[in-house]
Image 1 (tube, rainbow, N blue to C red):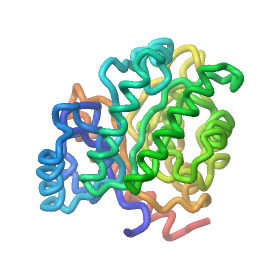
Image 2 (cartoon, rainbow, N blue to C red; image 1 turned 90 degrees about the horizontal axis):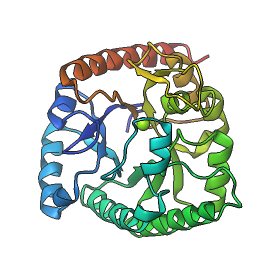
Image 3 (tube, helix red, strand yellow; image 1 turned 45 degrees about the vertical axis):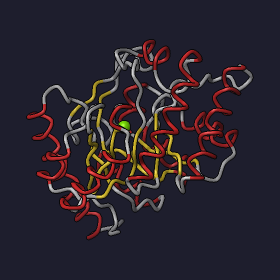
Length: 284
Ligand code: MG
């Protein structure tokens, strides 16, 4: 694969991504796919989807798990509802992640990713050990499917995430780096975090955001790529420095306004194309 192929976050029937037709119209060669709802996670649907992808010349580079009942309404709601952290849904969601891994395998995709949720910052908290265990077990399952597991950034600081990866202690667990999430959640300056996580970053999102007045208590604001406080040129140059050559996958989480979403992703593709050319001409 060429360096930094462009991509877009895509949905079949769930999640905040664009429809596959939109990804095709935008002309991207890669997508991250939000896993479909349980009813649509069959080999037949995977086969159909794979055929559509192949006629469009699009490759799925990661399949993201997401769950019924998750809400990103505000930070306390994320703590309560997202990922494998809430104990009451953990077993059923871990089972779903195994199904999603199988679905990804049918698509020929070697990466499964998710938001784990808010891991307790205190590693002595019994909940911390439980989440390490469920994550390690999931790594083992996806490994049998020939896959890696990517944890999306946002809810932890870079240091917290690195400690967690160390505690999970598997050779197929990596990071999906989303710089805007660091700003939205107020968990740290994204460029510094990217440098710290370095070679463990195996997939990324291109998303932008502005800091909240009270970071960590209130949400920051997700904005069109290039209009926020990530600093897209610095972001790409830092990806270059850490040796990341994989897809640049754009996320714009305004699925309720599909026309605007498509237009803004179109502009983001333009911006990334220009920056790629600029950096190729002057690597610095
Ligand atoms: Mg993301």
